[in-house]
Each structure stands twice: as C-alpha cells, then as structure tokens.
Image (tube, rainbow, N blue to C red; front, top):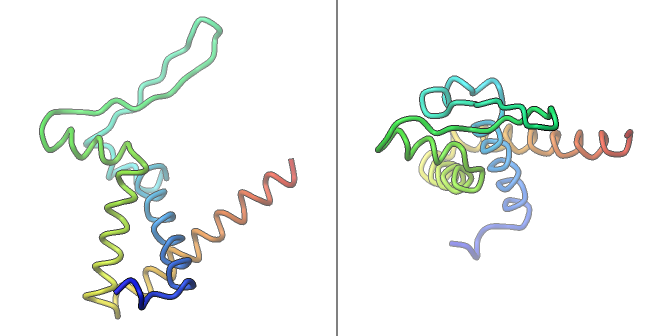
Length: 119
C-alpha cells in the first residue's frame, strides 16, 4: 500500500493533516469543540507579563479528549488516521476535503513565510 502513494500525494496529504490539526487545536472557529474539554487560564507573573495556558477539564473520557485536543502531536495522529481512512473508504467525499485542507495549509505556510519576510 505504501508503495502506491506518490510523493505529491504524500505532500498534499501532509498539508491537509497539518491544516486540520491546526484547525482543531488552535483556531478560534473551532473553540466550541474544545470548550467542553479545555479551559484557558490567564496569569500575570511578577514581571507583569501575561501568560495563557490550558487547563484540562474533568476526568475519564472528558480528560482524555482534553489531553488529546491540547496536544498538537496527538491530535495530528488522529487527524491523519481519519483523513487516510476516510480517503480510503469514501474517496468521493474525502478527496475534495483533503484537497481543500491541503490548499488552506499551503496558503497558511506561505502567509507565515511572507509575514517573516516583511518584518
């Protein structure tokens, strides 16, 4: 199976997983998904610097999902598995989704590069 995937497909799939993971873990638009499992805490330290960190809510499955959603690497594994299996079993539905996520992921990376160059 791994012998049949091209480098271009791997490249596109990687950007799709990157974008979906970032969408779930960081983006404001999906905060409603994280809200039942995570809480943001804000503290100001002795040097008057404000720091924000994540507090995981609950116990059991709720805490597990909170841990998952607070970890970019963990969420990335599940996003990769979901997109891969979805593309395998339901290609007509998942291929356009994967392509849209990949294009958005590439655009995000390009924007970050441009921002760095402009600074």
